[in-house]
Each structure stands twice: as C-alpha cells, then as structure tokens.
Length: 306
Image 1 (spheres, rainbow, N blue to C red):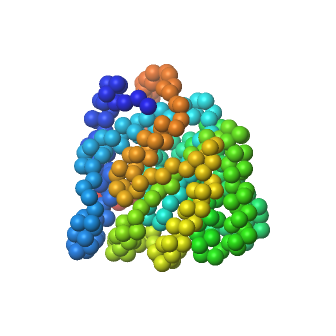
Image 2 (cartoon, rainbow, N blue to C red; image 1 turned 60 degrees about the horizontal axis):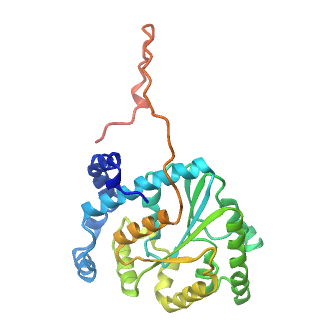
C-alpha cells in the first residue's frame, strides 16, 4: 500500500480535507452529551487512552484515499470483492463499515445487512438468500453479518436445530471454496471485544437516546448467553478457518484503532494499484441571452429555519 508521504498530492488533499472531516466525524459521534455524566466518567475511567483525534482522522483519511484507489481498480478490472464482518454485538462492525463506505461510490461498494429470514426463505437451501447479494464484476460487497448467523445467534438462541448447525458446518467450507473458485476475493473479519467492554457499550446505548435503536432483545440476550456465544465462536474458528478463506480477528476494545487496523489490513489483502485517469476539465457554461429564468412559487422552497 502506498503512503501519503510518497504522494505530495495526497498530502495536500489530506490537509485540505482534515478540518471538514473533523466536523463530519464529530457529528457522527456527537451522542456523548446525551450520556449521564456519571456513566461518561465510568466509561472513560475503564478504558485506556486512545489515539488523539487529529492523528486518528489523518490516518483515516489516508486509508480512505487508498480505498478510493481500490474502488477504481476493482471497477476497472472487474474484480469481485466480498468482505464479511462478524463478531459480538456492539463490537464495532458497523463503525468500520461506515468508515469504509464513507467516501466510496455506492454503485461500486454496497452493504448487505439482511433481516431475519421470511417463511419462504426458511424453506430454501440455507445459503440461497445470500447468493443474490454476492458481488458481480466490478463490485465490493460488505456483509454486515452473514451466513454465519446459523453458527451464532441461530444456534445459541435455538432457532436452528443441532442437525441444521452440523449441516452448516459441513457445507460452509465447500460453499466458500466455490465462491473463491468463481473468482470472488473472500475476506472474513471477526471483531472481538471483552466482556467488560461489551457491558460498558450496552450501558452507553441504554442511556443514550440516539443509540437506543441499536439495542434489540437479541442483543440483550447476548449478555445473558456470553459463554454460549464464546463456545459458538470457538467452533466457527475451528471448523471454518480454511486456507482459501481464513478468519482475521480484529481486536475491537479501542474503536479507533480497530477501524484503522481493519481498513489497513483489508487494503493489504488485495493487490490493487493506481488506475490512470484522463485529466478532468470543467467545460465553459453556455449562456443564452434570450433565456429568462422562471420565478418559482415560494411554496416550493424549503423554509430557511437555520
């Protein structure tokens, strides 16, 4: 992967973008004022210092510049990239997905986050509902949870029988080998956090009105069944960590470092390179002296309240 120090144009872009990005990222994480002061003190006391904001955003922008190069390479070469994000609830999967997609073209890079299966889907081959979402040529697809639901929540919560789970474990290695043989670059990440960190993050969500929507009954049950999920995770690693599609564990207790480490690692897995592009020149505006711009009625305009 190239670095900003080797590309003066990227360094200039970083400097120009940094202030705007700081504002944008503050907005994404603005929920702190909604927390009780006591909970905020507990959370900060329990966690070691993270990367300072400016260093974090500078590193993030550098990586996002590389993600744009990756996107251009995927689109130009017709490559098919599939990235799976798994892990415990509140481990940070959504945060890293948001930072990956933040500056990319949604027509090239899309996120798949499927709801629970419908009655019809429950009668289908287990992998069938995932197949339509696999990447075509020139696409990057990010799965926010995946077919590993069967080995995780479905197994722990009793939504799948022991026989169905065993069949899954027998099928998934060959299914993933088929994907790789078809030309899909399959990369699997597991976000790992400690018991204490998950408890603190759940408390943050409970006391933060802007994040309460993230808590579901299944999330709360994951606290009760922590050890069951641990056993399920161990089985997943033991039975599905194949050479063609290995697992990569992201240490997620520090959200900022987890995001940077995961994106950097993702870029290292793919042999992308710069795609030459034609210089872009803005054409001159055409003025028609006989054209009069119509005045639109006031009711069509959004009121200026801010």
